[in-house]
Image (cartoon, rainbow, N blue to C red):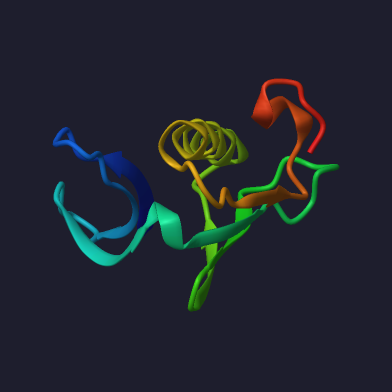
Length: 110
């Protein structure tokens, strides 16, 4: 299955990225499939703010990628980490978060 990782380097200046990794059945290791720099992220689409679903879309500068988390809860956690990381490390263009439940952004209506 595929999984997503939001990571930040510990070197200055910090570099944040989103990586799609794949874990093969029977293996404990992950293989990197695709990686984007956080600056390339333009939009995070939660698909449906009225129901807990694991599906979401990420729109990057030159790419669109459909994702499915293992659970709606994991999607929520990923969005919270991603939103916090964007607020902390992106100074210019921050991505738009649309169709996201308000609980994901700490109670703010998105």
